[in-house]
Image (tube, rainbow, N blue to C red; front, side, top):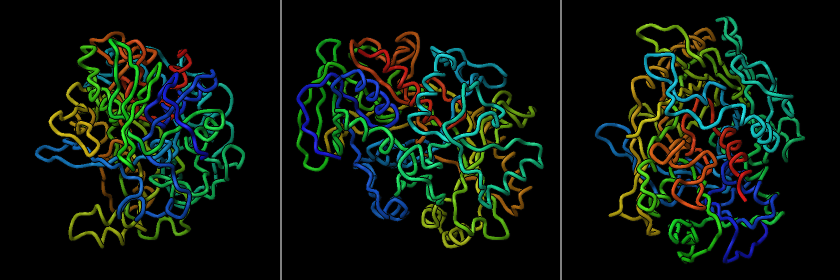
Length: 520
């Protein structure tokens, strides 16, 4: 990127460069506003490190955040975790699956033991009001998909720009055939990948390193490929490897941010007429709480109702190598249980979620995370695995939260971030139901043994600054303005009051386009 001379004052400062921040910036730049994005991550390096699991995930991970956060998600155990920070947010490392939420998802989260939805978690608007923004986001991100093959797909006007690769990998062929034998309806996942060579930079070569890896050739249509470079040419300023420590106020008006350069430690202040927090479900409430927005506005909901989906992988061990050609195997979804399945004492009523095939993680990562005594065996078995990802909706709970320790600060002087999270019985039952169905598919495909691996990261973090009708139940209004302030906004996944059971990136992009359309 070309050098930018950072000004002392902007129309808008946006904190975070992911789907929420970048799509907000796009609308504002097109309106002729002066915009600065501040991002604590570094620009992605497009070299062999993109496909190197050691550099990305194991030995001194090159995009790991400088500061960890503490997570209480298991009784009696506090874990230290790190985010991966890049310009482009999590889009650079995500798996590129780009779903629209289903129409019913906007009605709120499921109510345990019933077919009902919780009206207290209903969105302030529905799918119809978001449709045109979904379409815009799909165009901006070059989404490849095949319409009307997903039996739970909401109404979509027109076709996708292009199709995904329909040449199934060996693992995906087995999953597709097994699903059909069981009477299910597999379909090709909508993906932000340049399969055609026309909607992005380089044509996808169908390599196996997509999920949790950067794309060396920029065929994955992430934010750092598709959005930010073009906006920079139009005048967007991007300040990378810089942290926002605090938002400053004059009465109810946000007027500036205090920042620190991660490399030099130099601190400064930049003014703005408006400020947008777009750092995601952990970082946005962290910044608001560190800035004492809760005290300023009297809002008790900031950081509350943390969601992250209840995800897990079912691994099937096969008698022969699963993917000897070593090609992309994240291709298909099985939607048949999205709205639920059979109901008895062992299965929850209401929606369950989505099943997707997913590439194997690297042998090194498997070995590093396997129990002591099984590390070498786990690495050897890796070539014989076919995995199915199960994504179920989790229920918003006031006690699941992001909070700060005011008596402890990180190396930059910001209060340390802490996270508390527990799933409820209904959440766990939905995932277990999907696990059961995933094992049936893998068994039909020829798997001999199975292993369930819960996902305990916050890559699908949602809900901590949720939208709503008033300050008593939410943090922002339907236009994403923080209650009790004149010009502070939160535009990212944290504003989602419920999350459905699909990957959230496209929904975050669409809601950002909608919210920023209203900004002056």
